[in-house]
Amino acid sequence: MFGMLATTAFAVALEAAPADTAALSRYRGFILESSVAEVLGTSGARPADVETLHTRPAPIQQLEWRAPYVGSTVVDADPVRSILFAFHEGQLYQMTVTYHRERTEGLSTADLVAALTETYGPPVASTVRARAGQVTSETITLARWTGPDQSITLTRGSYAPDVQLIVRATGRAERAAATIREARALDTAEAPARQQEARDKALAEAAAAKRRNKPAFKP
Image (cartoon, rainbow, N blue to C red; front, side, top):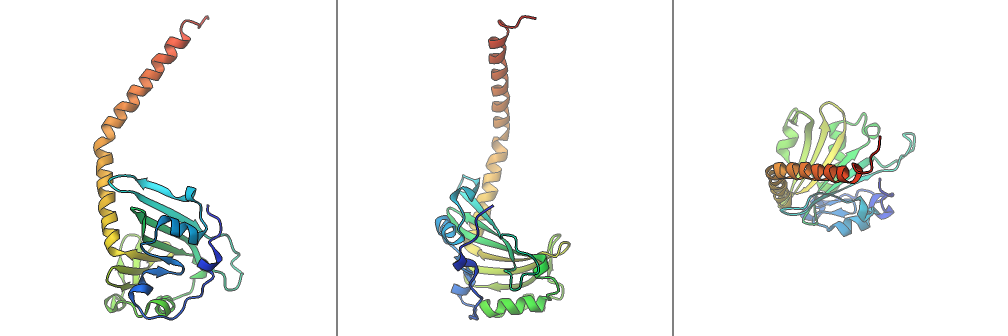
């Protein structure tokens, strides 16, 4: 659990702005392609809170921030419950913002899109026209904004009503996905050797314990 995010990052009101590259690369005080150190500085998190998921063929890391508890009766409480920051080679490629259910309850898709349009401009028309959105087993896509190398996707859970906003640097996200696939393939290929190494180590430890304890054991 992190400390509270810096006030400058989470007390800034959304400002109306056209949907341009700069707007689509940001979520509040955070900017895509920022370094781990920059995100730590803005969020107020600690270096120890950064989790390394893979080290090869390139580093994949993540940092999860969870908002401190605020009662549901508090007026103008921040709706953000958590943000998951994902890094590829030390650069921020994705932010997954999850909102509190009780602070999005009763809001229609039009309400949510209208609020985001003030910052990011109108969403992609083809997504808005979709009657039921793009449905997966877990989420429904409500709206999408795109730029030259950015995408912002608004989703709602198809079973649990969690609303999420996914802000992504598309090019780096594709490279990160390829890195993750290769890392998993390496782990799978090396698993038998690691398992055998673990078995050999356990046998050696058992043999050493026997040599140590057998001479001294007297019933």
